[in-house]
Length: 105
Image (cartoon, rainbow, N blue to C red; front, side, top):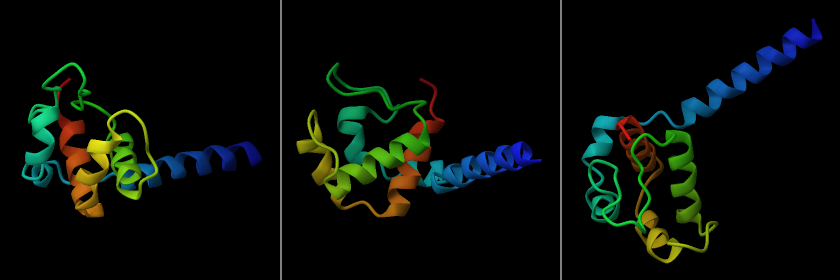
């Protein structure tokens, strides 16, 4: 019985994480103009130094953007990403993450 309860809690916690990243891909498509300069509207980096975002986990993308916005992510391209993320609301981030996650890699 205890094992069943543990499995149920793990399953429900997974649902909660997915709910946090439940943005609107259609709305996100209209919010990626600044992102597209490096990551492309198709989610494929415009140069080898820019990562492909197409097909990435929405939860991961949302977490990364929020970390850039909060100044919690450094190194690499943080000097470029942090200022870009500063102007994004939680809804913007969720929508952009959902859009790039919905694309085929």
